Length: 424
Image (cartoon, rainbow, N blue to C red; front, side, top):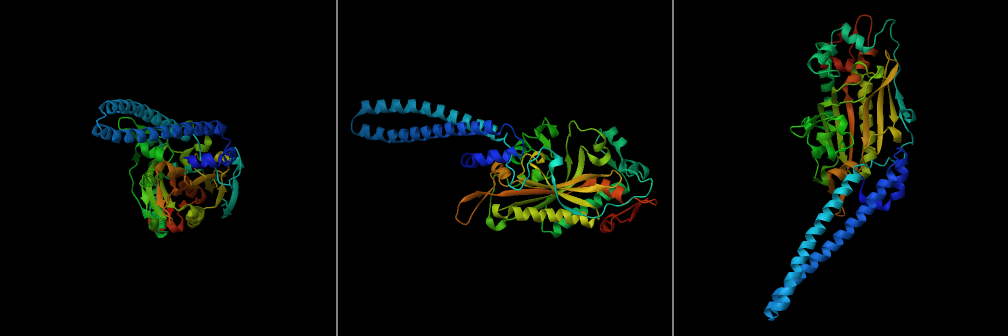
């Protein structure tokens, strides 16, 4: 969440930045935050003054008793008792102001970085890089939802039988391709210096608030009501929350973690041809990379993480493009996001396979994730994450782009992981 200091000292900058998101409630919410903060600080000052006076008066009672001024001591004791009631009332008011302050701050999205273009939707995103040539397929080439039936490698009907729509069953070489991609992505992350983490796939409410999934995406997450736990939408949530309420040693920075998990998203309201087959699922596999670093390093690291994802796509021989998302298409938490999209030759469209984002201090402020700088001052860290990579659309693109009349060729980089060169 945004810090109070930024909201107080850079109000106009925040308002201008949130215009890029077309966020209409910014002015009203910021005014509410600042008014509530003013009352909170006034209450805190009154409370501190009352406690200081009560402590001083408590010391005087003994002095008065020693001086034989029992009547004055009794009156002072009565005054202190009344002050205690006032202290309790002020503490309750302070707690209410702090609760209200958080409720308002949770509604404010992150401020886009200066290079983020204004815009309302994906049509306003900017292509900043393209790589590879779109393959020309043979006559009669099929989309992946037909290919998986032809080669019996993924079964959506069985998934519906045991769970529901959006929960596919991977079979035979389809399951082996999944495992191969996961191992390949983790191996590449290991080579890049990421420490592998295997986190829980459920998180508590505090973790959801820590990384900003709550309250923003509450309706998109599966909830286990009896236990108060959420199924994770991405490994970013548990991995980043490893550092909630932590003061990191400067020598340990940057922190680089990677993890494979299944991911769960309700995707409420999604329908149509653009979400057919593997294009959008309720459960899918993903390898996530996460970095935590000093503020001055975060945009260099964002570029480093983007290049890592681009390298994976190039090794898989998939044509892709890199997009700088506009304000209206960015996630709630992000200050800047690059999306990677691969071209699906059979569907004749681009498929998003990765988002790489810099959250600056937005998550760290919620997480109370800090370090002590060289001047000895506590400072919020920056958090970043990226999909490296999400499997479903990668699988869709591999199947569609590599299909031949003899079968589906496996990218050379994956053959040591699959143990086979062709799905036929």
